[in-house]
Image (cartoon, rainbow, N blue to C red; front, side):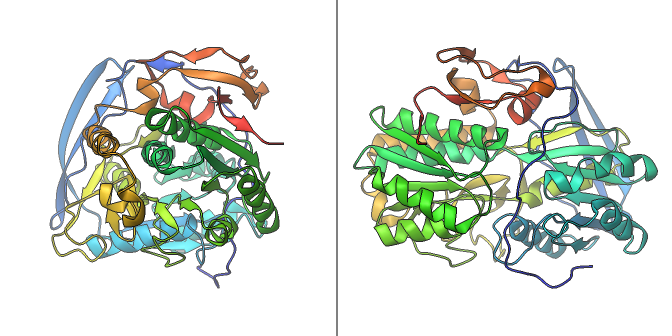
Length: 454
């Protein structure tokens, strides 16, 4: 089912919002802080399931279950593995799980969305031919609407699909994502500290909730470490358009930015940063340590998305026989899987957090390029270290701490009856935690202060 890999990067576009979403904000302690999964030993595991009901009452259930002979994850990949920091990193995740767990295996079908093939047929083949009992859609169009139909046809199978902005789900169709924004906030602290021009730039793909959430967290970090810094963004319009990505990145350099990042999928923004001799901030995975696309002479910092942690959480619910799993799983830095002491991926690390700063196979403060670390004030380094530790402990989040104020720019969501809030509107006050549904599907505005180049 794997087919021949082609060097094509992920997602052309994400779907629009469909289905109902939850309320705006919840108390900080409600809902998404969960006990890290325990390590599997032998043929039986103890699964401790903690879930929140209406975000007020918590019940804990512990049961002993026998591991099936083999749990098979079937992956409907929207794009291709080779040269991709998205589908490629997800393939790395399942390879790691296969090394860790003798009861786990996977199969995949790649390029499903990019080649215009039917996700229903792809998933059905993975189930009926390859005996997959958990199915994953790596792009939103690979899962919606296909998995809504399939989840009814195969009630004993778990389906999970990445959330772009649609949070619709069913009993055995789970919507999943990782809180990349937590690491992006930390990247913002670093970017604000190392800019000399006080101008930082983002080449942004499409205008979607995912990108508005990303730039919001990045901007909050920038302003905390450097109130004088400005963030300039310019839209490419697509996830993957190398000529346009280069054009947009060069226009940001012409604006005077000396730190550049991107929410697109080609290497052009990285190459522009290297050619222009400015600092680059990476996304999605450790492009220096894993792919060797650049060095820490160009990449000031990056983050790694550990999809294996998210997969692990879903697999354990499946093995526990939970028929009504949480329909939205939005895991953050406070979730991890344990690593063997002799692991080859991050030597010396005993825990793999769902997302973390990672650059040249180093994590945390060590992920900052040695060439820029000495430019960062000691108090900022201590703040980065503290914020990271607090998010790992599950006691802090940038979207809890700060108010979110609209710039008046964004994307209306007519499916939900949401216009873009007027400039200056405080949509979310400080010290309140937005619901997962709101962060994933309703954050439809740009933060006040971000400058959009036309």
